[in-house]
Each structure stands twice: as structure tokens, then as C-alpha cells.
Image (cartoon, rainbow, N blue to C red):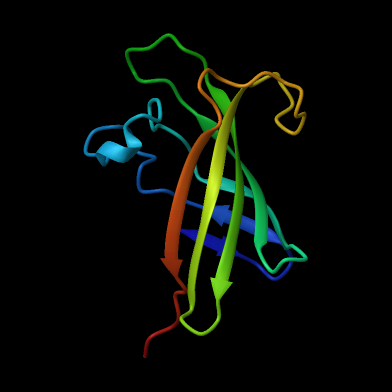
Amino acid sequence: MITLTLDGNFFSIDSNQGGSQGVPKAAQSFPNNRFTDGQGVWKCSQSGEFIATAFNFNFPAPQSTGPVTTGRADYRATFNPVSQTVEGTFEIRTFNLSANPLDNNVPVGEGEPFRFTFTGERVTVRN
């Protein structure tokens, strides 16, 4: 679920973020699936897409000694005003907590970025 605010804030939650048990097979390649909601910023591009960058924290599995990491998700999507639907892609990269996730020269985790597609529908108030 994505929320875009008029002043450029971006919020996301993901049905996979509670761990890997019960996660669809397509998402099981993403390690761990223990992460927080994402928060960031968005804007419209000249081509009519919205682009966004959001950050979250990733936690190791309970039996793991792995570190907590920072995740950066980069989104690109288009909105269809007639059907009130959205479709797009996002890429996730993870970074050590001490690294700057905005620095494109910082090494990312093995096999990254992870790439995903999404579709959605605008939520409106129902009486």
C-alpha cells in the first residue's frame, strides 16, 4: 500500500514485511522479509510518472546473528486517471547502518538490487 501526500511525502507498507512464512513463492527470494514500513519522498517526472525514494530498516531472522540494515526502495510508476489504477516497478537495495544509502557508490548487498513490479487501485471513501 502506497500513500502519496500533496507535499511530497511517500509512505509504503508491504504484505510481505512480516517474515517469510506464508509469503508467495515469487517473493521468497528476497532474504528474510522482516522490515519496517517505508518512508520517503516522491515527485512527478516530465514523462508523467511518479518517482519516489523511500527508506526502511531490515531485521535479521530471530536465529540469525546478522546485522540490522537500511533498505532503500526506488519506485517508478504511472497512474491512469480513467481507470484510477497504478502500475510500476521498484528496486530495493540494502546498506550497512553506517553507510549513506543516498550514495550510489556505496556497495549494496549480494544479488542486488532486487526488482519487483506492482499494480494497484486508488482507494476512495465509500459511503
